[in-house]
Length: 140
Image (cartoon, rainbow, N blue to C red; front, side):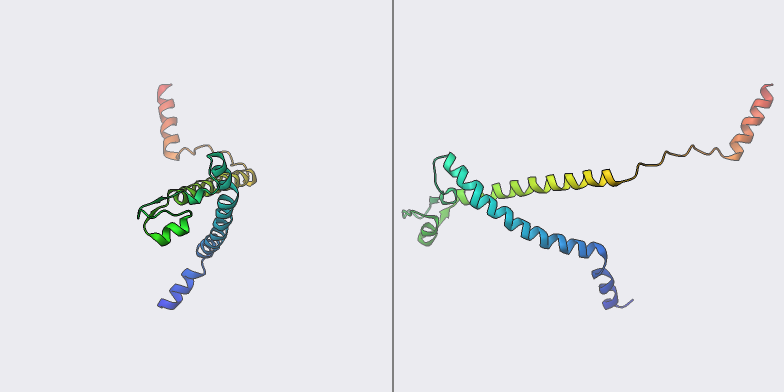
């Protein structure tokens, strides 16, 4: 089999196509979750702990005072812990949502699967049956 035909066979297999679709949908879904975290959840978290914009929590390492994270980054090194916490919360929420989705998909799969057939009784080999008959005959 030639290299190109082998590659073509690999590329059009169902698993590869499914993986590609999953990556594309996952990227788009990640953007949605990022927006939910950045635009909806983090402002509420910031309000709860007394700040207006959680992503603007930072420590200026260069010593130059700055009001926003963008200004601080222009002035020098910044320890942007608020931005890190936003990304961390984004990951936790995304992981939780994916867990819930996979759990629901597994439940739906189980509901649609037919009940397993009862296991057949084990078939005893003929030689064992013959030996049992001989044993029983000898007992009489």
